[in-house]
Image (cartoon, rainbow, N blue to C red):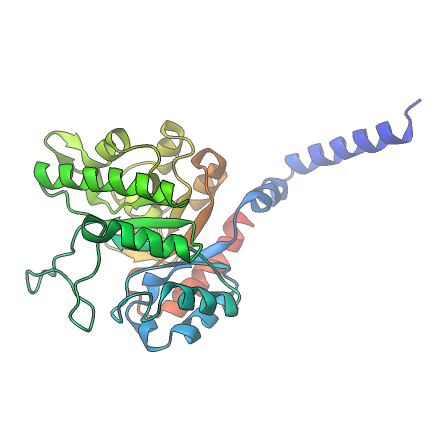
Length: 301
């Protein structure tokens, strides 16, 4: 005869087994293991500079819990010191998890000169300011710093960027934070006969992680899940945005061709810790991230 403990244990196992057979069970278990949704603040560039706190509150009111910051035309962290911005994020009920920086200077196509903030000060880069940037992010207790883009148009630029990322990754580790690299689709083209993204993975210390942009990797024709399986645990950060069927540009989650359900089902293999909804230069940023949030709830529970 079963005792009470055995009965409860067996009953629980049977109930769980029944759930697994149902369509909702997988979504329940998936939701239970995923981090909360975040927003990459570049979605609100440059409008956020006009009302930083109000923008953050709009994001929190939708239901997002985390943010990843980007550069600001006001300089610094939306015109603030890191600690001041961190407190503002906390005050509206959000958590600051990551910050984007440049690897090398971004050259403004219209001027041919490095991009500056509104005061005329060149944007800081890992090439020239890696220790300063890392120390600021670490000092604000932000766990991740991400290289948003870097130069690799030829073999010399690529070698320089690889050296910068190796140096920055080790410095970030010493400071107690993680450096990651964010891709566009160009990283999946070749320089000197080898795909740039493969060189980053092969030649940069595994201390550096990757922030996979699901829109751009899809545009490049590369399977995100295949990357997770080839490099398990190296993808703790994702940019979650869709792309239209003609691959002309980003779209809100659930309105394009990215297979988010399959990707999120492989989150554990990727090593996912944080994911950020993003939409580059949308017509209406609030509407876009609201659509993405609501569709994510349908896709992953």
